[in-house]
Every structure is written in C-alpha cells, then in structure tokens.
Length: 246
Image 1: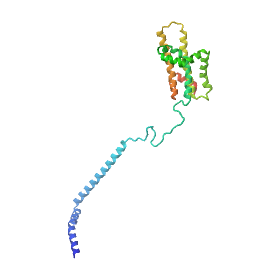
Image 2 (image 1 turned 180 degrees about the vertical axis):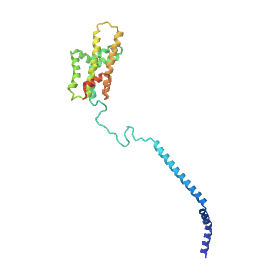
Image 3 (image 1 turned 180 degrees about the horizontal axis):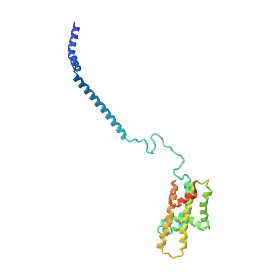
C-alpha cells in the first residue's frame, strides 16, 4: 500500500517536468532557436580555438631559433680540433724560412736611413746593434752581397722539391725588392760628389728608406701570422710569375 502511494507521488511530481519537455520539443520555433543558439556557441568555441592556435604559431615563428654555440658550431656537436696544423697560407717552420730572405733588402738599403737615424737616436741605436754588424760584414767580404743575392734568386728554383711554394715566393719577392733598390743606389752614388742641398737630399733618401722598410715589415709580419704577402703592387705579381704555378 505504501509502495503504491510513493509511486503515485513520484509520477505526480515528474508529470510537470515531462509536460514541460514535451511542450518544448513539440514547439518548432523553440526547438529551432535552441539549435541555432547551440550551433552559434559551438562556432564561437571553434573560432576561439583557431585563434589560440594561430597565436601560438605566430609566437613560435617570431621566436628566433639559435642552434649555434658561441663558436659558430651546431649545439650538441663538438668542434673538430686539428692537431699540429697551423692556420693560414704559410704553415709551421715555413713562416721563419719565409722571413729570412728579407734580410737582403734590409742590408743593401741600410744606408738610406742615415738621416732618420740622426734624427731618431733610439732607432739609430737599434740599427747599430741589430743590423750594422751584418752590413759591415758584407762590406768587408768582396762579392758577398752578390753571392747572397744569387743564392736567394736561384736556390729556390733549384731546390723546388725541398722548399714549399710560399718560401720560394717570399725569396723571389725579397730579391725583387732588393732589385728595386738598385736604381736609387745608382742615382745616389752618381751624385755623391755633387753639392746637393740637404733640404733636397734628405726627403728623397728618407722616402726610399720608408718605402722599402714598409714593404719588408709588411712581408715579415704577414709571414709570421701565416698570411701570404702578395699585395705589393707589381712586385708580388712578378714574384708569382717567377715562381710558377707549382
């Protein structure tokens, strides 16, 4: 008896709700509006998801990608180390060998620096200690300067197999710089007995000294740093031609 009363009460309570649902679905205008509202909400959700995804893609594209370390190598990849290998065009002991031939123009052109040595005593002192002993030794032995010239001019060609191309190039370039000093030397010796004012003689002599010393310093420093000193106009081209392609 009690169970039947509970069932009847439950049905009585649920009947208004069932009537409401029945009325909602039975009304076409209400059903159409509900579906339209539901579709608009779902469309807004989809658009919002698309906007979020586009924003994330833009942020990833704008973020710079740097896969290189401070040494310019890809991260996670160890740089390859080269052992006992020098960088540059001139390597190893060839750097010192390439500098030796430039003693020839330094010795032959030392007399052009007499005015600069007078005006700059510390430079004259260095010349007296470092270079003057060689100059006096070459002057004391007849034809020693010519022998040294022929050695640097011909030995690199005769010892082609034992000397690298860079050493032979620098030997030829040093010889050509020394050849360029022949002309001002001849002119200086021809006017040695003439009474030329120092105001004219000193600038010309200093110009020759500064010119050839600059070439020697450029060549020696380039060799010591492993770079080929092939930027001297005309002289470097002639040295390349005399050495040949090999």
